[in-house]
Image (cartoon, rainbow, N blue to C red; front, side, top):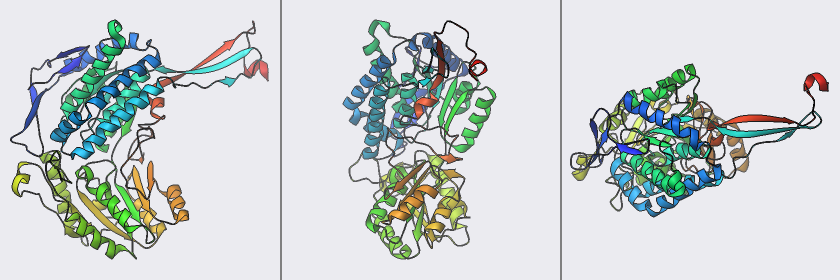
Length: 502
């Protein structure tokens, strides 16, 4: 089946007439999901022009009415949740429970954004002068270029697109090449909701979808002077490129980049709870999360016993197609991603002291040979200077390090260029609060896994994880809106603020 772009309210083929295949990573040869456009600069420019024109009308739609659109989006997503999740597992690989969670996060974000349409508050402050009033308002920015990754193909686009729309911006959406069908579904739903809520006042071009390669579509969004803001989630390498070009063009840029997240387990912790958390954090989504637990930092007193229990649990994990019952771990999203994981395992094996205690190879038994499966892998005796302890792998590989006390554990945790998510397991309230204070990360969990962010809270990190903006919660609305200060003088004379007042 051939799918299309949405530009200016019309579903249409790319100007190139070319397509790329989208296949099931658990059954690569036998399950072709669809053919998606390989778009060109002409397609991007057409979409941007449509979004720029639509902005003239969309910005004037009352914010509560814009919120009503997203309320309907959420309602439709609730009705179609199981279908969306099934198809997302088919195209991305993670198990059905996780794709249901991915879809639910989109639903939560829709309803939250809908309510924010009535809460785009400004701040008012008293004037220092007589008979004068000071007000402030949020105003939309313009055309937003939205570039998203493949690991959360529903949740992450909603984090970006919904706040952008509620604030009165228009959107050109470039989804990941590996998960285009989920993007098509989302945009179909948004466009349907627009038509339902606005009726005869429907505005074409508010939401536009352009499929294709990042090197073409992404670069064109960056270069187009009518794109006012860029929101990107992906690798730090690409993020640096976007920040460089966007800064030169004075575009507003939000970057959510890599992570090398760690879970600390102290010797007073609930061991079974910590064990459940690291299994979920390290091997959920096959480790393909920016918040995945890539490092486990164990207190020396419980290290050996914890590893023994962890190894026992990991060996029981079932690999397979995520829409089948009983499957715990799906495939890597692509052959190239599996090769990257395998290269990092080889790097770990070549480290002087690191010891691989399980996994370390492609899974090719039976039906697993049809997809890009990799066995959950654990390295022990890892030291902070090793590459597998510092670099993002984005796969089912866990590096275990040992610490003598809390201070050393936090030092190890902070010892990478990233600072996205973090976790500590302890029953000592003082240690918990010290960790909250001292860990360098945008997210810290106490007695919880490094994954599990909620839609109404800020999401993002420090250091090389991003450029300071946040997704989610109330904070994201600052990125998608400008502040306008308004002074109303009803004194009947010219008052020159500080000159006349002091």
